[in-house]
Length: 302
Ligand SMILES: Nc1ncnc2c1ncn2[C@@H]1O[C@H](COP(=O)(O)OP(=O)(O)OP(=O)(O)O)[C@@H](O)[C@H]1O
Ligand SMILES: [Mg+2]
Image (cartoon, rainbow, N blue to C red; front, top):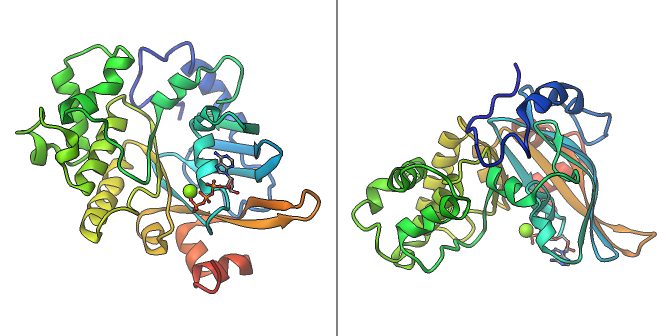
């Protein structure tokens, strides 16, 4: 099946992501390679193909040799001990590391088969197609409405703004709670509501992908459950990549899981993160191939 954008975006197409180029490239470019960490390729089409990815902060190689495909319309979980490079890797998927002056990315990240790090790709357009939600809800000091309208306004999206905002809030399962107070400041919302507002804000620019870096770690169990339900609902229309320290959460929501670890690079004398194992979530949690994965998921390490 050729790639058909879920949310055709007149602002970024056809220049940054030419769908006809993608149609012809996607198949060839996203075939799994023979990396040892790739246990089984995802059954679905890939949204990302990561190839030989290294990330440096100055001289420090924080992540090395990452090669795997992430499936479309599924939830991929990234797990592993603190400092193994989960956030660093996640930020590569929408060029957020570009904003860190010392960061350098080597290798390829194919998005629908097209290298996000190619010279002619505009990182701002990338971040519109690939939205991000952070650990701590970070609404702007503005009204609920203006928070959601922010991205569409900045990027000059056409259409009825009230309609765009309502749709995003509905998708984030927040509309009924806030429809009568859209003009009030977002800081007056609960933490769980603020996080769903940040999800709505990310959805408002009509992305294909949501990247979530520990989106529930600041939330209570009820709010966490709501976000997890929401993720499962959203995966029908979006591809999601989530970093989590919560194993149960990874097991509950994701279909594929990548386990990262951090090891001393003897030559360089510093610690570097790498993928140990990437597999369907159930397999990774119940019968992993690597003893390091087993130690981690059973709580013996980490
Ligand atoms: N902005 C930065 N500048 C320099 N080094 C960084 C930067 N961000 C991360 N690092 C380093 O890169 C390595 C990986 O960090 P990263 O934050 O990606 O790990 P993580 O797996 O997300 O950890 P955690 O689970 O604690 O969030 C660490 O050694 C960290 O110190
Ligand atoms: Mg992190």
